[in-house]
Image (cartoon, rainbow, N blue to C red; front, side):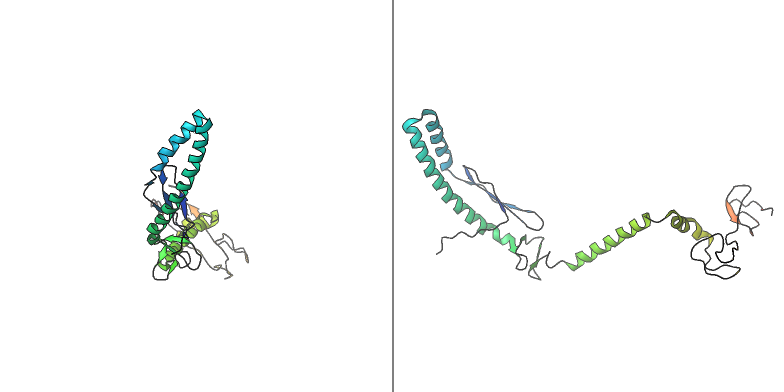
Length: 216
């Protein structure tokens, strides 16, 4: 049986002198799991030996140095074992994408149907909803950037009626305008109500806003 320890890249080592603990996270969304803390019982005793050696020195200092080396070897062995066990424990929660090699969580970032991570094989329903939302946002911004003339046309002039051709020479009108660019004929003929001040057509006999009679 091989003594090699399989390792992954998406983890953080939280181990201390007193025990071992690891966090494994998804390369795509960043969420993940923290393993249970595995206590290393030799850690406390070894720390005491280090403290005595540091205070007394001499032969005890040399013993402390030797003890520290023994502790380090033991700690490394226990650390390797704890890491190996943690990897095996956590692997069912993750899958490695064969296309991009990222380790992703099976709960939210893995497509079981495609056998790929959702970055390589996006969920089409989600992408369509996101595209529609993005398009709506673009339309809002496009409306917000309209020129004042276009806004006025949309908000006011639309109710008044917009002519496509000149009533005198029938020349096409590129935009809402007051005079024909070909013959100079007046396109918009407005007057204002003497009672309420609202604009009204010159041919109108009564103000559509207040009902006052136009004396023209």
